[in-house]
Image (cartoon, rainbow, N blue to C red; front, side):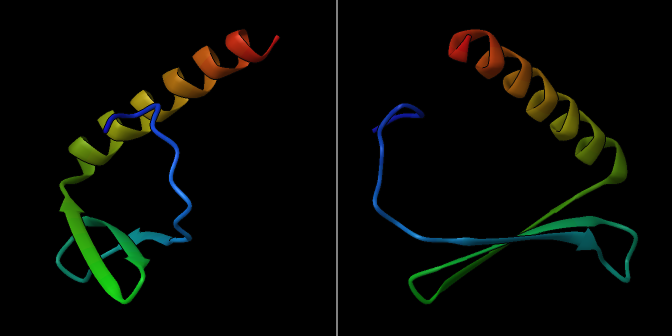
Length: 62
């Protein structure tokens, strides 16, 4: 298993703030719910990593 291993699983992703000031990534798939809370600073780091991965993906797709 790894990041390049494809799966045939459908999942829903929701992202939003919590009432405690955290950022929650909420993943639901096959009846399993995974809430992941991050500080705003951690969420910004994750967003930067997503942007970097998107840029790298664009280069590979060209």
